[in-house]
Length: 328
Ligand code: AQP
Image 1: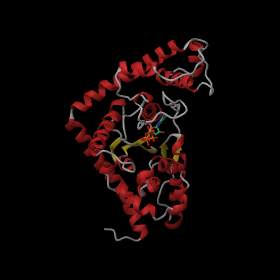
Image 2: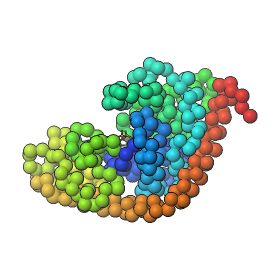
Image 3: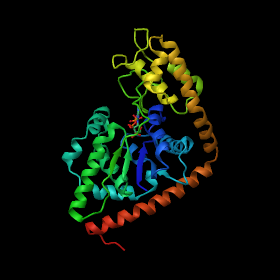
Image 4: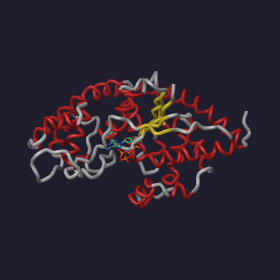
């Protein structure tokens, strides 16, 4: 079986964007592959975090992985920082990655302009850690959103460079673009993507928002001064609501437009909200169940991290030997 690796940062409340863009796809494909789903907490400290919140978000995100349907007995589900091989490989790979390459990364440019007070070296070398995450496990496929394409390209370049110098060491991974996920946009500014670290709580819907909150946020979603539904780039707010409706129901845009075209916005908002609530309620119920049992989640984390560590160690040992470290 081919192997896949993917991760999400525990940087806030996981949104329906993260769900439709990533998690739901993982659930669809995880049984076909040998899968690792990591909570990438080491990536998130490139931006300042409140320690207690980071720890809670990490546990919550792990519980959510399980609640959406990823079985921790069949997949490796763990926090990145519990597997030290990620950091060790990242250091070695950083010596095979050029400043010029990292300087071209658009996410670094964006994030450094957003966090001018804290442009740290980790923000710059973020893609090296991501390369280490993937290459450590010899992943064949990496489910990513289009915004991560450039980072995956860099991962491939670094893998090929290393293989070129030392002979076959790393599997060169391919991107896997899922089929469920439309890009979900902010409910308050539909030209921006919905983001878990958005400061406006009305801009995003959390996977854990209760039904009333979901309905209200959808009701308040920004549309336009026009009054009838059509699906086009000129009407980004309405298009986003149709996308959300389709993601939650599994209907195609054509089917949805057969239902909503030419109507006012009220019915679209109502049905999109109801469909979302129906999708989220069972996930929330499972999440509450899992969160009640702290010992259960502790055990899953420890057991999964141990297994991931043993798997990663195989690659790390090989790499250490190749670069000339003393290895026993
Ligand atoms: N709006 C979105 N629509 C579809 N997919 C999305 N993803 C994120 N937002 C949307 C996908 O979710 C995964 C999470 O990746 P991440 O944790 O590295 O964070 P991100 O991409 O930077 O997502 P956020 O929510 O915007 O986080 P913050 O606010 O912390 O930067 C990825 O697979 C991504 O494509």
